Length: 327
Image 1 (cartoon, rainbow, N blue to C red):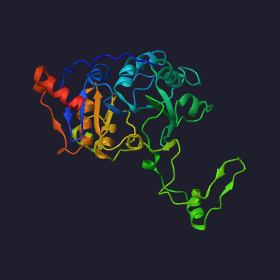
Image 2 (image 1 turned 90 degrees about the vertical axis):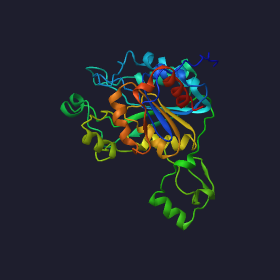
Image 3 (image 1 turned 135 degrees about the horizontal axis):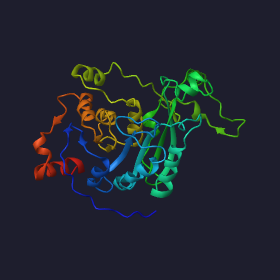
């Protein structure tokens, strides 16, 4: 699909703060993305506001509005990605208001991104959060006609059908059964399903290839981010995903030195994961308190606050262009 390229527009503001590897910007992703060069980002890893029935303090579109709301950003997401780049979206499902049935909004978004924007579905992933509370209470704990929803969808989309990826970077520990099999040896054979298993199956490859079901709890109550928020009297972001999620995809889909963007950055979990693994990163967030608290994810010696006087005018514009475009 041929896309009409729009020229980058000037960035008005300098970063809210910078670190060795990245920069966080205060503003709307719709405006900030337009200042990025074509093909300048290797991975967009993000968890946008979900289309939940109840309005959240960080703002979220309704189920009926959601696809059109997200598509406002999608052309620029496509434009700024490298040809082998990826877009990974963590998106939770939702219930139909007042009914014990599920919304299709996240599936409709996936289809629209592929059919209208030109993305390819590289693979669908699912994040299982065993700590998730049973909800909605009316259907799960009161009437007891549904079970709790513990899985988020993770849409891995790519600009072309051959994105950069290497599953050897995200190998997991072998199961006890596999360790026993490797120890006693494996005889090549054809399985009842018809799959031909060679003797390579029994060799130690350094770990097992992970599945597309990622199991991570979401309980960082004792982490540095939460501890510092409490110490400073700052309210933490109410909807954070675990750092293992962006870490998995950053390692799987990028190399050290690549650029990772989170356009709905929240508490900067993606930025922290990128910083730890030596990737350059950009974070866009329109709520200043979230960026203020997000600095706690980085060692104070690593981040450089930008004086408010430098965020405006030509000086701020020049600094923003340099940091944002990594020129």
